[in-house]
Image (cartoon, rainbow over the protein chains, first blue to last red):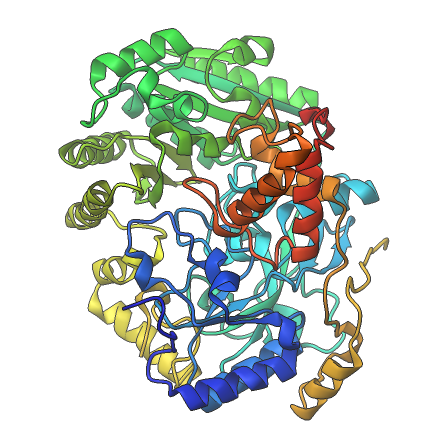
Length: 516
Length: 124
């Protein structure tokens, strides 16, 4: 497809598209409908290993209110125009602000950026999709509320609605973000608007405090899906604790992951360690501030010898655990003693906090900021590890069991090694599960390397699925393949729901592999 | 209970309100707002967005606060605009919805002049 030709939504005539664009201009104003190539360029910047020509929008529409969204989707239904919804569009490595496929119109909700309510007593917030974490953080600081956010690594430039709806995670005790979401306002494909949970009750005071409402619980249907456009979302905020102790535990050897997870699991389930802990591999911990070429300039996967040198030179373990304690100083002391005792048994762990941890060469400073919900993008130093702007997060779920963790690590290293890529990874520990997050870093300016990254990612998906491991989330290029690993019966239900709620298939076709 | 609410951050356009009314979609007229967002000061955009990667102590992206000679400022301003809108390698693109054209013009001019050359990362 030539980029000089006019790009149209799939199956839509030029005349119908022009009429739809005119309607959009009437709804949001001419300045808020983008159709020129130069205006649409920011939506086409991707980090995943797809063909740029597959991710070019035909237009972008920027509403500022839910009522405008209602009018837009009604127009889309009339002319069968597909729209791809984004909020802040900073889901870097998962698709960014690009459409699901070329020709879709971007429904860009970034200008719906009002913080509608923050209740410092109930510790809740109600926000629109365009609100960034930075904006909410600044607001809370300005008001002097003693509330903490839980943010993902892109923190400042991303936002709670988009991250939560994609079931992203942060690093505080509220790190499983969808668990701490409460109440939504959703515009359906037919233009109707609903409020979930208690929000359907007129003048309800409990919309942001009671998740379940009455009858079937619907909120999950609007996460990682294309069944509606979420225009408001409630979330819970963590009260600032009287004391906070981030800490670091380092282990020296690859096989130690098994011991770490076996010790960690009961501590997490019992909430002795309450936050979303990370167990970070050497290359991730170093990669946020060290460039690969300082240790190895070859095209193969970085050799073991170089990894050992990094560990020694940078003061980084093979596995580096970043966790934190929250509460009164007395509570922290009690839990700290339990943790020290548990991790001291084998004699392999180095356990530290405060100045001792800060002196180590990993990411203690920025991890300490993230574990208290402060804005920090230091993690994106990872993009300098290999350079070239290619990144895809391969993120299979694991149960928190040592043997399984070792199996996943070895499988990933084997497949990445086959394609010449590095194992740049961490485990994010939930209550009983772990997100095994691997950043497949590659040089996107090299077409051969990009193709190799694509093939590697595809093989990772298939081989992990064969052993019973599925992904919790993926980028636009691989949504269809990942959906396939979860089986046809589930996909049929997803399609049935799509048919019922969006019979013209106008909302984000292809999201999570769901389309008509 | 001490609830806090933010006022709508944008102006209500009579033209757009009229257009919306045509669609009979005004369920919540008190929350309706439309139009261009209020432009943030360049220093605020730098603090909220750029500094997280480009502040000298972050080193995720290159330092961008050094002043350019006057004769080269226009070229540098154009380069900044192009990089912000298109992205470059690991640098993400930023859409007008995130940094408006007005904000980007002021930001790129301020960066080229070196207005934030002494901005310490700790100021964020």
